[in-house]
Length: 351
Image: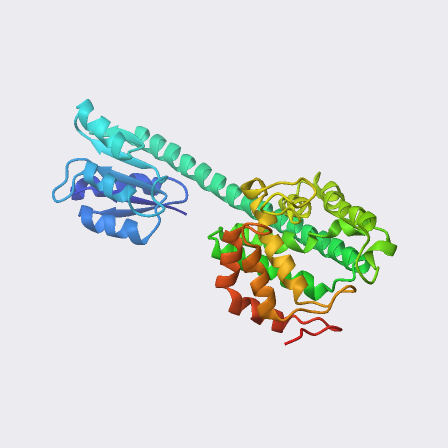
């Protein structure tokens, strides 16, 4: 049922328009002799069409339309203004205020019915388009959720694959990702960028799946030749991920390539320095090294945590971006809570 609000200060006109509306199929007339009352009803209910007279006391048609359009959800509802004047200035003002069409007094019944039908068809088409847009948005949301779910599944598979080859524990991967998120938050990165680095950071060493076990699992320090081979994992990880269209995997590719660069330019594989190193790489460098220092490795025992914090401070401007170090140190209590929450199964921290 189409609800048609009719606002006119003339009782006779209201009765005439009400009778004409009743002749139309599936239409309900809602007459108001006082404009403020009609406006109040229109603010509490959603009409399918508004018919409003121009010359009324208290609130004329121009002001009524202006106020009606300011009510939420009323910008697209058709408004038919009835006026006895041919003054184009009035009509221009009505159009500026949001009128859809006009009827000139005294209106002809057949013209009235024809214009009302046109306005109702216009509104029905608008509602159908709005419903279609809403359904389309829901379909897009579902498809996006499916893509994200598959993306998350792929990330999990890649992380597990890396863990099978790397002696580092899954707890390390979790911790350094959370550390990276802490630094990103302290640096003022957006929530979306914080979430992105949290998801991408665990793949920082994915390139190690291309390094031979004899090097990857060696106990003790690597020879210069072995270390040269080990350093290839940064570019291997980048090559593995760089062609993905996934925003997460692209970020992971950037991190894989840049997290072993050093702020003074002495890192690898590109010898980048300062802000030429991508910010994500600078963030992950701090997070990864700190957690590695506190963890057992085939070639070393875990460090005391104060020694690890000192190492970061002393390495600012040389190994690490000082801004990233300061950001991490500002969140040191939260970092230690993360260490306590996600502990290695085999090698607990030395306290």
